[in-house]
Length: 369
Image 1 (cartoon, rainbow, N blue to C red):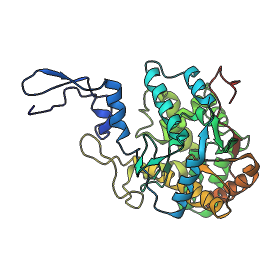
Image 2: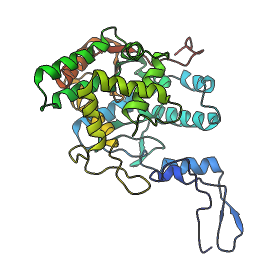
Image 3: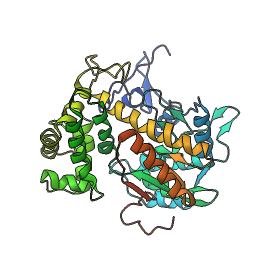
Image 4: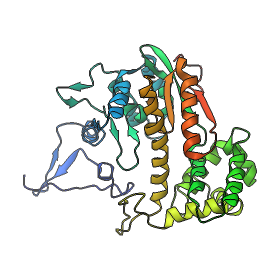
């Protein structure tokens, strides 16, 4: 055998994501043009390839990293999780792969031994992103509804979630508007914060924009369409460009200072946000990605460097899921107070916090967790 070649390129994924860009096949070709079968099936081949990627690592740089890692190691999923995994709905056409994915992480979390002779077991990982400060763990890799089955020493856990996290964090951007009169900035910020007065920002924004959609659909349009895509006039597939345009127009009309700040972050290169950015197919930096990086930095600074650090100092168990904190029921009120205080210090406004277990899928709500 003299030469191996890629014989099938999957154009569905972006060039930078190598592990998903090149589709493996159950055969490969060498120079003689004969087809030689691989030693194991396609699916196993794919899983082995993905398992050796960046997820399969444990990187601990600080005492807080080590504490959070030890907390995640203590978590287990109820035996009912496997039964629920077999019953839940998966995206059409991907059920088999998604179910395998879920079970791999269930097995990784429930494994008594996380590391064997300094080799991390399949899919067990802990890594804090140096770019945005987020911690990535097997708990975050789980399907959200499966987190309802998490246990600490057989006790059920609750999660404290910040409602409308990204829109709320935008309030922190008003503190950066030093070139505008303070009273003008405060007046617009107060007007924006008023959208939380009824406790449901997305439902209020449905009314605010005069849209005929659900709060869930509005959330998708705000997050995926307006805030995190390059051009609100060209949102990703499945997101209404009509609604996204309405959202952009509402921000520009009613919150012009905030809209201008968002636009600036998306269009003007700022090395203080990130030293380098991902590039498009023509080698140009994706400047708009600065916005997502900035908000994730704000979020991790509050929830990990602030909230989790204080909970560690006070010896209160927790795990992090980006803009949410998981804890024991007995600690809920304490953790809520800590989260609210850190958000108020960073953003300047009182957040709307929700305490619950992740919801099970529709039709399985009464499943015994």
